Image (cartoon, protein in one colour):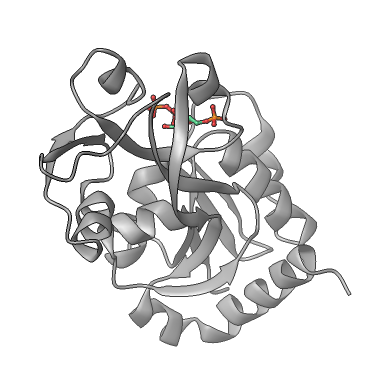
Length: 211
Ligand code: PRP
């Protein structure tokens, strides 16, 4: 029987873009384009089985081996630090992790800085590196609202086009790190399926960096 590579893709716009790369690399699975709410699709002939998962869950599926490989943003990898191999920078889903605050914000180093974020570990590490005392306020979305309502002084969040910041009168204060989508692999499964995973990685690499 053919070895199947199990691939966790992030549901949503990035996932669609990434699937198109797998398709162009020769790993198509036509049933994935059918309009339905199925979450698992396979093409036995090509040896691939795709499943759509919440973007922030891809790394968990891969770390625990339920998926052999997957696509996760660098933000998720930095936040959760999963024990996986990072095989390839897919150079899509490009954005940045930033500190933003209302226009005119000045950091008063005598006071604890209140930081609202979804990315508590990233924020904690970043400010620990600057020896800055902070109070983290963990939110799950619409982070931009926090400093407007006085819930926090700054936010640590992802900025892509900058539109959300602009439309809420916030400004970028510091860049933390650049983000893009990465192909990741489960360490043990990579050993069992190394030929298949390496072939797939090389085909994708040709999509990312055409000769
Ligand atoms: C992300 C991020 C920003 C926005 C940035 O939010 O948290 O709010 O995108 O994009 P922009 O710079 O192009 O405006 P997301 O859409 O994931 O929603 P949420 O954080 O509110 O869940």
